[in-house]
Length: 484
Image (cartoon, rainbow, N blue to C red; front, side, top):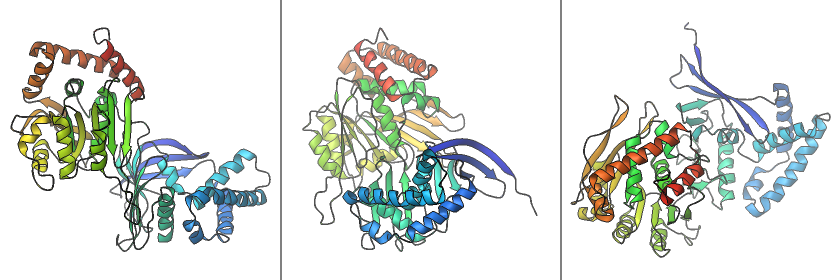
């Protein structure tokens, strides 16, 4: 028999509602995927046994069906009633416990019965990007920023429990998930995106997929530090944004397109009006920016009240925007309106699903988007993001400019062997556009790029990663770039 080897990859602490958790990420020699192990540290095993008894006594009096039917407006009242009932049980079983201990135990029981239980503990780990429930027979999976997909030691005991959690999430945002409507897109109050499905649509069981909202968003300095992008590439993007050239961010699922869109926003000047349009709020811009975020809305069960991306895009043109940021372009009319906005002098920044610059052009010029290729000339650059599924690393794969006829010219290309983003062509169209609108010569533009590169390096060297601090430096730069 081969002995199992255990290798500790990382260890840290997480806290949620007074409940303290030790997290260990462990690699086992006989398992293909590392394990994410959570252990509640401030509640002893013997206490957990008593809490389980309290939970059983409590749920014996509780009708989960009625809880699920409760409207959101009445749910807080119901929660207070349950709080009082659980508190009485805690006084009965823990008569000598102080108030702090009772509050911790109360939060634990409330989460187990009326919240998302141990899922909430996972959602409080800032190192996680995704929390996934596949069915009650499998443990919960998580996507870790550093280690990729991990199997946890957290499981949900029944399919009805998974369905109950989906119902709780939906009710908070006035969404329903039923046998007639077995698919649900929603979001938590924290902004985390949720997708839920019910069996038999998902044949192995009910599922919940939660993509966490980045409370500490990606910034250009973090991207440079993580080697997601190079200093040269960052300076080139900054130059394009300063001169109001439009940029499309492309990439596959999970490649970091929205994160890159957030990074691009670091370079916006504070004296311009920015309108952002998203299906679910993910962007987080600096507080000193003149920013109006807009969000789409699904129709109600009667099919009324829906607000689409196209509705918001058309409406944004009436809001005197200087910059328009679009979460994702999927359809022909959205792409047409975005391109028309570029042609009428607006700077547009958007994402699209495509794996490289050439594929991005193909996607834009073929069904279902089907734009005339010459119409793409109003777009200045394509920034392609990529995630290596084997290592989990995200990198900028390509930066391309658009030629006059709507083709692509790759300026910088990622080399996976050296892990570097290298220049392979000199810019022609971007340089021409900047020369046309500013009068700067090629030499002056190169000097400006070097200046920007030095500022970025200074920010990286001084660990300036906070989005608002970067926003403040950018504001000073646009006010007096020579002084900064």
